[in-house]
Amino acid sequence: MTENEISYKIIGAALELHRTIGSGLLESAYENALAFELRELGLNVEQQYPMPFIYKNVKQDVGYRLDLVVENKVIVEVKSVEALAPVHFAQLHTYLKLSDLKLGLLINFNSKILKENIHRIVNNL
Image 1: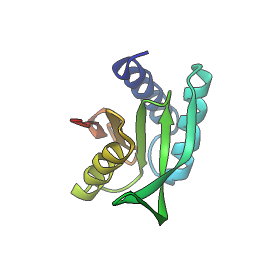
Image 2: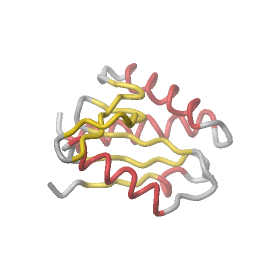
Image 3: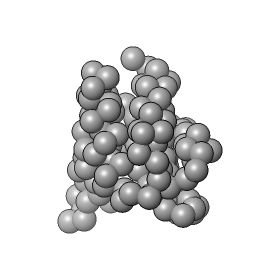
Image 4: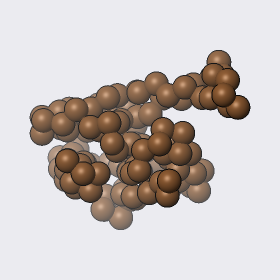
């Protein structure tokens, strides 16, 4: 599957989840429920995927965890905040650069209309 095909399934699952539950839960609840929905669709999903931080060819003692990595191609960053801030977009863009993946989805479940809070971030390798 291409990144676009995968993202289409992720967005559909996120919309279904939001229709069923609504807003107001913690990010961890949405992350777990979305991972469940995606696995039910037959997709490979890694949760809290560890990503090392390498600076000048030296692995640093700090690391990052990606909320979801789907089919080893798409990063999903799950939020449940009042409003997305520029730092949320920058975070996902940096994750894409560090992982060499092409596509990420930033999804803020704390919204009345979820489709207005799903953002595609593309890594211009």
